Length: 193
Image (cartoon, rainbow, N blue to C red):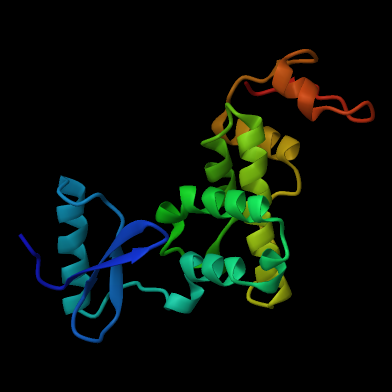
């Protein structure tokens, strides 16, 4: 059954759903179609649009727009084709969650949440961090944001994730992830795995 005012768009191999009346603003629906959450978000979006209370960021300030501009930039086109492919794949992994986010309001904790999803695989988390940092560096160079909120290193991020989630931190000098991340000048002394 087709719902009124529901708009579907295909981008990056994914389907995005919006509620839009005529040529007015659109409100993103992040839940999967057919679920109770989707119905609730759809009803809330219709209600917000009919009362003029829709909280919609301009499309040019959405994370999806920034990622698209970054991937089409000359700097990315100069990268090795395999690096471009990996960077695109990594960014698309969490694009669905961040697609409608206003990148100007992005905070370090948002980045840490995305990295925490891959905390069991530090190499995957580091790759994610590099991709996010590259997109935000692009935004800083274009003066779209003032600063890059992505943390400078994964080891510092691990400590903040552990502190934020109040996990028990154990001294570690020998587990494989910590051994890979440590250097002779800066050994890994705390483990969150």
